[in-house]
Image 1 (cartoon, helix red, strand yellow):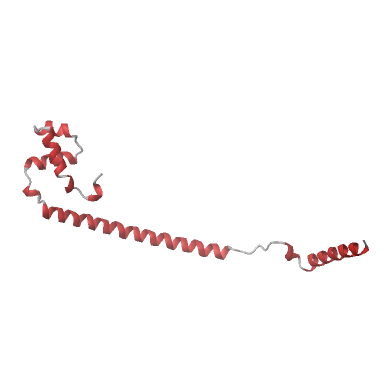
Image 2 (cartoon, one colour; image 1 turned 45 degrees about the horizontal axis):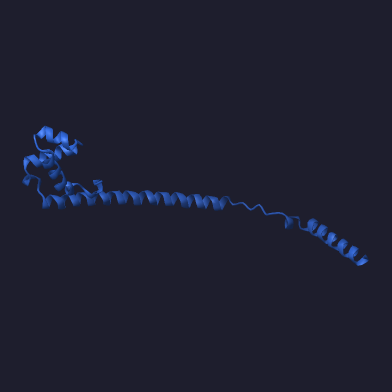
Length: 130
């Protein structure tokens, strides 16, 4: 029993000595992460700037592709080659008129208006199709 008491007393004294000589040994270090935070914030700002540039570039290329598609479609189906009836139906359809209203305004049958719209559905840009 005496050895146990001496051993326990030795451990306690050793812990007290370590605590007095090196108090930082038993506590967490409070390092300053301000520099790391500043670097992360700067990197985030650079990434957001680059993202905005890429999105602008994509938007520009998207517009260029839509223009190219319109040119290709115009070369296959010239607007001057279409009948005035078809052009009138398409014009009213662009104004978001429904089929029955278009038929009434132009004096055409519902089936004829539906056929014209169905055949000319491909003339819309792909990005604007439903």
